[in-house]
Length: 272
Image (cartoon, rainbow, N blue to C red; front, top):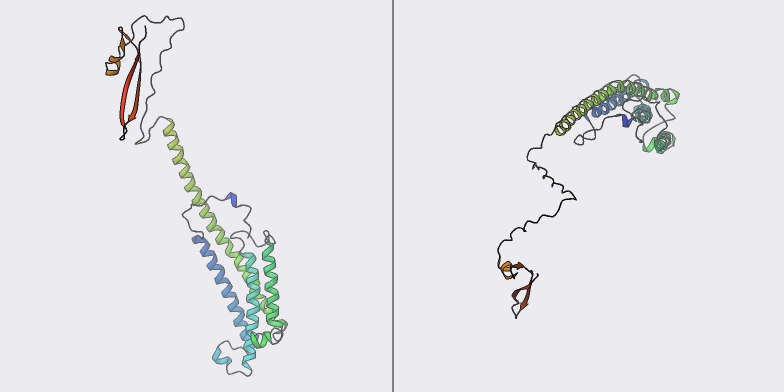
């Protein structure tokens, strides 16, 4: 079934919700109850017509040729059931839209309905297959039986469309609850963003202070004649002192011997 064109107008559903919601279950139960009630009424009326006004099994068994009479009533109920199910396929395509809304939108469903109708007429009209195997007599019920079978689809169509008024109200209330939930979430997010913009810090997050920027030295300033800062005394620095001035030192290591003992040395190059 293709999606409805108004689906983007509905509020997003929370991911933790089930696919079939409670109000959907109510709609399906109501539609199933309507179908059962209408077909039972059609069958009881057919029993009263074809079984000489009898509707209970014990009374029908006393009638002459009661098996064929039961077959006639059963045939009417069967035809009515198939027609009602086919009509209900159109009514159940939407929870709130009427049956004429995009009634031919699902091409595959049209093919399935046509196939179901062909199977119905084969089941009730083909000799031997209908009366000997399926115990149905489509020709014996006459025009009156076929007209009585129309009560099923017409009754289901009318009652299921009326039930959509209640289902549509449930659907609207659910959308209103979703809207209120989303509005509350939007307000909470806006408050959090406003608090963050005002300089609020998140609990547990480290706070950093910007380092003071270095003072800009004018290009016209002369280099200072003050002596350089003293270098901490280290063995390498002591070895690098030549003629009272620092020298450039190099530090290198190499591995010697089978155990790769590390031998290091310091090289000194004096500078005037």
